[in-house]
Image 1 (tube, rainbow, N blue to C red):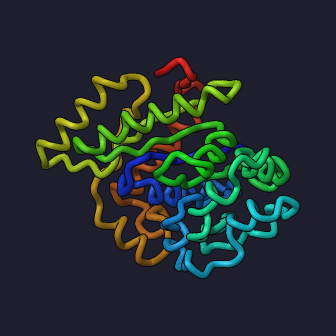
Image 2: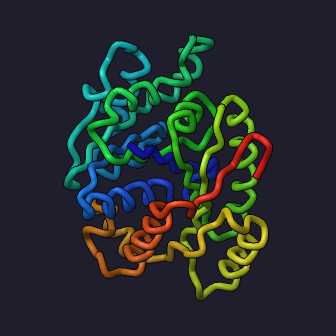
Length: 262
């Protein structure tokens, strides 16, 4: 099973949209997918019309009950071949609750190892903060996607994200493949064009050559609780995620980061 973490310490950059859209493409290709919502805001869970304030079961129970099987907290989605482990707002308290508990950073990895034969892919929507949830996601991941909105403040957030990643990887024995994904690109604005140019100059081989464009179909897909690929497969937004998946699944197309830097 391939495990992809989608992370950025700045919110509103397209993490949830990217996770759901890629799941949509994979499901159309006949792949089995597990989605995990590790963000206390529960954006992915809300995408599927769930309420993180009241949701049970949720990923919170995996941390509270070590003997619990990951199958016990999965629920069906309206995407074929795709299941979800929803978030609960209670996961925001895990850093305080778990303290120095041994093995707390490997809860998700151990759970996924136990169900690896059930799925082809697992996509993890990460929280925007460094903590036990982010550590769990990166410990389990074989690839990291970093969506970055094409505007100046988001680029500053990317710098903080890569600094955080560097710290976490000091405890990881192997490098992590990662790809920066420019999102919300509006080719009509000078600010977006300049931001994209700056990203390409600064991050070179680590940035995807494509972009995720601004597309009103994303909003409609979210309202319907469907991936854009299922709602409007010929839209610009959907086509961009087809292209991104092609990049991610071709061997050698994503470069690695180690604790020594980019």
